[in-house]
Image 1 (spheres, helix red, strand yellow):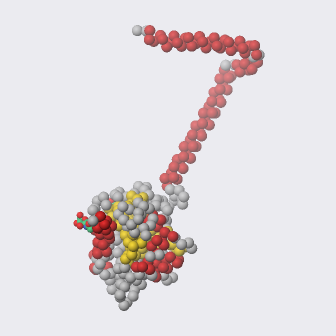
Image 2 (cartoon, protein in one colour):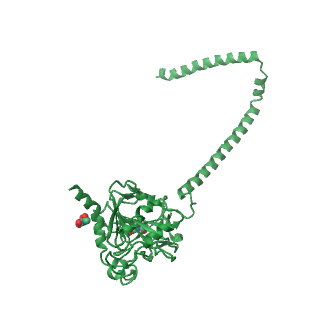
Length: 376
Ligand SMILES: *[C@@H]1O[C@H](CO)[C@@H](O)[C@H](O)[C@H]1NC(C)=O
Ligand SMILES: *[C@@H]1O[C@H](CO)[C@@H](O)[C@H](O)[C@H]1NC(C)=O
């Protein structure tokens, strides 16, 4: 009974997700991108994704605090499910993984990848920055679990989904985190194939800097293209090796296992869509240096100003004190000089006199303290 409940909890949202995608569509060909809107009306909407982020036209929003993945690293012992849906490789995520840092709590549903074709041609990512593609893109999809009971209810609603977009570029070094997925792609070469893979730390796939990102309102990038997504595209790119990318781009088929026409699953990225007056916000400013956030820069500027003012006040005080001391010396004749000329016995006498004075003054003080009480 418990196992059935767990199964339903873990996999039903995923099954509904695949069911919604059932109508056949492709990236190129008969029901290619330009035809999507004929079959899925929302794909022709005015708030579609992906978009090209023109950094000079983004608006800095200081309210965009760092995103906080919750439980991403506590993957537990249950294996993850990896499957080929004919459009991409999907990893279902346990719903205790969630995303903070947004106006609501969002529960993780699944993650998947978009890539190019293994050739020298440019592209692979869905989002572009200043017209520039990355080689691939990872999407981590969440639904608004504060407002909606499940993924299928949330996916059609405004603010129903939150997707993290991670741009992937290639470099010399292998990224071991991505091998948790790439190493198992050979087991799901054909559409509809599914495999259990060891659970792993999902946060290790994300960039280190979760504080710098672009935010806009958009859609799912595949049919039915529901315009329900709060997008967060990280500024920092993640790096994998050329060999890792090549494996990802050349190992999967979009066709089913028995299909005589084998079709490689390649170029599974959608073209960028018009912004249509939507704003793209940035959680950071271009001017804030590589290491410093705008908040830090402001703090430093204020700190320096306060320091200067403080120093000026101290210098002024010292000068004032020196001036007033020297004028007092002149007015009260040359008392310090007299003191210097005093000899030992004279000093001793003065000390005694001082002691007498002190005791009398203490007695006077005591009287003063008592007197107000005795007065009516
Ligand atoms: C999702 O929630 C809706 C609305 O409460 C409900 O009708 C539907 O059965 C739920 N679906 C799943 C898969 O739990
Ligand atoms: C997204 O849309 C909502 C509702 O219209 C709005 O309140 C919010 O400011 C928008 N967010 C962005 C990033 O444009």
